[in-house]
Length: 478
Ligand code: HEC
Ligand code: HEC
Image (tube, protein in one colour):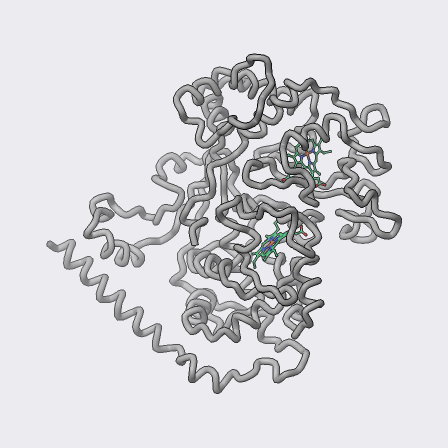
């Protein structure tokens, strides 16, 4: 009974608290008269759209990421845990609805159980944008706002980075776009962003300067958005959308009266950092190996998982494997050995994310041939003068190989639809160029791996074992 009264008390306090805050903001109608046209019809963007020192908010909950190497990891019940966790008794209906309200007041942090196999992403976060629940929720909402403009078309982030299909899209690339849409899964681990690494943090992927908020012509906005991934005008559109609830949230989270480029970027980046996928068949086998303190991954580790039906959504049907009767665990292990050995994949696709975070020219000449002098593509364009190296000409970022079954088509131009074709490319399709990555040369020439059909199949099967469990619904669902 005491407990119930306590909960009721919290509930009333919570209600009172909520009402008081809501009064501090004028209604949309009242606001209209004061804001008018933020730009007075001129072409210069108003400075207030850029940034404003956010007031630190004491009520916002920090988000902590706990990786599988941490002893606490096992204790966390799920991907998303209110900390301290809600005791099971109060999490049962009909108390659950009331408890969750009261618990919001009790919770001191959100703990995210980083999916198995992934490292702790926190060291990659800029120290001046620590993750919090308020930013995350706002970021998630902004992700779905259809207020992005490119020419006469409108988009939300989710129109190209579709949550249901690996946060990317099945098209080769957006019409008029320059590059294949990158998946946002595990972006928290990127050292730099985009195929050519032209920006550093996730905060910078949408806007680069205040000038992006100018009133742009259709052609300008199309070029900026689809070629540069600069979604200028978004903050202005938010500002003009007169969404009182959204402004209320901006004030609550950042203490600013309206959205700015800075706060929008912080919120979106926070949300993007929670789009995580791991716990692949490979990660589970690795866990068994570690627990048994065995030096090498073997068929046994995989056999156990496949037998017990713990293989997740690992599907080999339809792959048309011609491996002359080899069992699946044997194929996987052969693929793994080739990946690290004869096929040399791990020279670039290394570490827990299967990328060295570097840029390489892999000798892939697109349908238009090699770009001529002065028209070089890839990383070289964006490396500052004084640091340019010819190996960056036509070089693109080594992509992570986790989740390949959801991120086709492949390569920066989306030219390859099947993993089979990618492997055939590395086997016999690497083209000669002066800028070819060292790892793909043999004796000064482009490599010819001379893999057998069975070996190519084994590599594809191994790549499929790296497919993770899709991002948690709490992140992926709208
Ligand atoms: C019209 C389609 C489209 C829309 C809309 C779009 N993106 Fe992208 N996004 C892309 C493409 C294409 C790339 C790859 C661009 C490149 O590398 O130059 C990309 C790359 C990214 C990257 C870099 C990922 C990496 O691994 O380096 C991030 C982050 C990103 N987008 C976030 C967003 C957010 C947030 C929004 C919404 C505000 C958004 N995108 C809207 C197409 C789109
Ligand atoms: C020299 C470094 C290097 C080596 C060695 C290498 N890769 Fe790559 N890989 C890259 C780079 C860089 C890209 C992106 C190339 C592009 O888009 O132009 C890439 C792209 C890929 C992709 C497409 C991923 C996507 O999301 O688009 C797959 C799959 C892949 N590599 C698998 C392999 C396999 C299998 C091997 C071994 C047979 C291998 N790679 C060897 C650097 C390398």
